[in-house]
Length: 187
Image 1 (cartoon, one colour):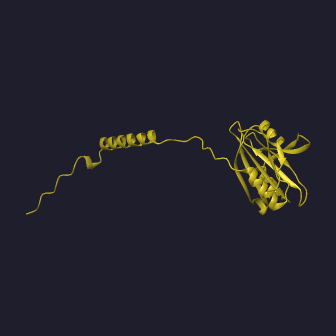
Image 2 (cartoon, rainbow, N blue to C red; image 1 turned 60 degrees about the horizontal axis):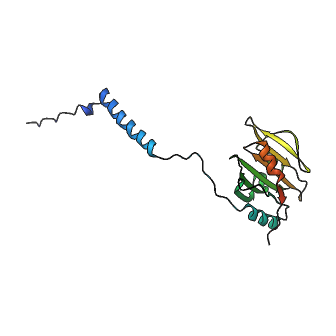
Image 3 (cartoon, rainbow, N blue to C red; image 1 turned 180 degrees about the vertical axis):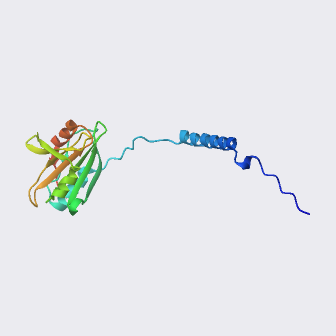
């Protein structure tokens, strides 16, 4: 005698209405998860001690390191590093948040290579010069993004080359560069 086979559930047969109902249940679960998970549109980085790092770099290298002074509390340094970059050129880099929620990246090095300069201005195209105070900066336009970079080329192993790129306005970049002053070495 054989045992009767249990009858299969109609739900397990994979009918189209059952699949639609399953997809609707899963859709409701996913929508609920999306609704309750917070989304962050902007992450504020904490301020760093750019002046302290700049003083240390000036002491260690003998470079005439420059940083902006007197810009106000809306200009916040978020990065300060000293490390090799393109072509292994030692570079002191600071990144600053601006009052308009953009960023300015300041890079300083000596005895730079053409590759270092190109990368430091984000491979921008040179488009003239800009006078800021008593110094003449080379102006670069970066891609089609209305982003700008300025470069002040030092000469030889003792001349400090400075580049500054911005995701903000050129006016902010000029304000930033006009505020540059030499940092006193630590110690």
